[in-house]
Amino acid sequence: MIREFSAAAIIALTAIGVTAQKADDGAGRSDRSHKASHSVDKAKSRVITLGPSTTYLEKGLSEEEVITFLGEPVSKAQTWRGGRSLVTYSYDRGYGRVLRIEFTEGLLSSYRNDTKH
Image (cartoon, rainbow, N blue to C red; front, side):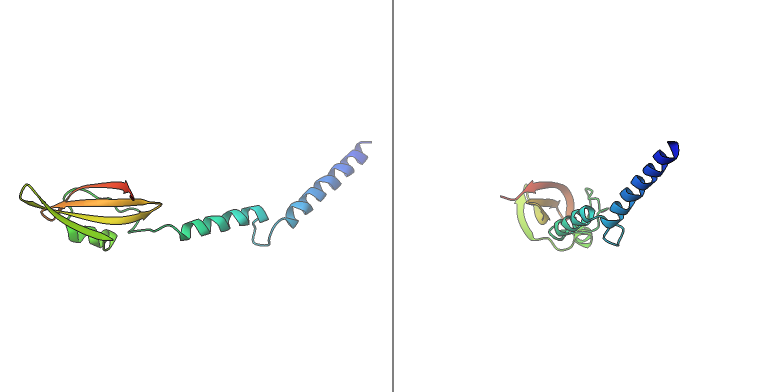
């Protein structure tokens, strides 16, 4: 009786293993994981990446340093406040976000993330 049960268990486990291997696409992925990675690849292609992901902005950087890190801005605006030059750079960040960087007298004085209007 125990031998019959053991034989039946081995046959059942072997059948499960064969079924799992058939779902594999040959590259070590099942059909479901392949579809998931394909949709992630599509999403990545729509994201705009500006500069390295490890770039951190800090007050006091010059306009040239920021351009070196992030590239040319999408737009630049200059105004005067209190007799001092205030320049604002705008960078599109994807998903309706805009990075705005303000320079006072050529040095980074503030930055913020806004949504596009």
